[in-house]
Length: 313
Image 1: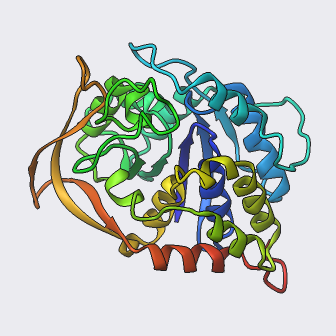
Image 2 (image 1 turned 135 degrees about the vertical axis):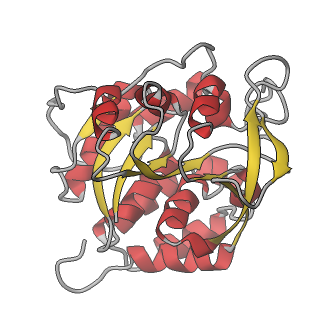
């Protein structure tokens, strides 16, 4: 399985990407970085550091859009500063070299290759994908799996952020609702892993202790460091397996339960960013994850990061 990861380089993105890098049957062909939890330049640098740690410096990291299409929505500044710095996570330094193309140019070119349709895991706001796919009536996409949205559960803008704009939007969609509306309208197979599913997989302090106490691979130790760096959120009950669940659902769809749906993204007004359910539609190309198997997720996540004999990292 070959995957393009479009990411805002948050801590849960690192867990998801480290998980994919640890799977022998998965190849990440490229990583594209978008605004979100991290700013693009430090986020891309941190991802190159992760790839160096994994011995996968062959994977290109393309820097993408720093701002949404139209709104000025951003994650709280304190969250972005922490994510940019990742001070408690130990990774090697890297040079400042980067591909000559930006993320949107790469994606535009890649989505024209009808002989090799792309599989995309979208872990942040959808700005890069909206711009890259905007000129193609039928982009060459095998599937898009997006972490974002909330259908039959509340949004999460208030979590750790009392000034949240509304109670119905999820952060990734809220940060660029126009982009989400464009991407969700594409006539390609899509799965939305939103809060309806991720709320079923909270990460608590006991999960961190259990995971960190195992004999872990190099990337497993990185994952433990990332979890340690977010312990303040974990202790307050505000941390879930958002992006790791989306990554696992792409590789093993049976970890979530999905239903076909017609979804409309609200792009104006008080409920901006809401992923509104128009109707459940079993014939839709657009699927929504409505449940997740938390026990299976945890056992697979832990097993993947256990230290193995031989060359596996």
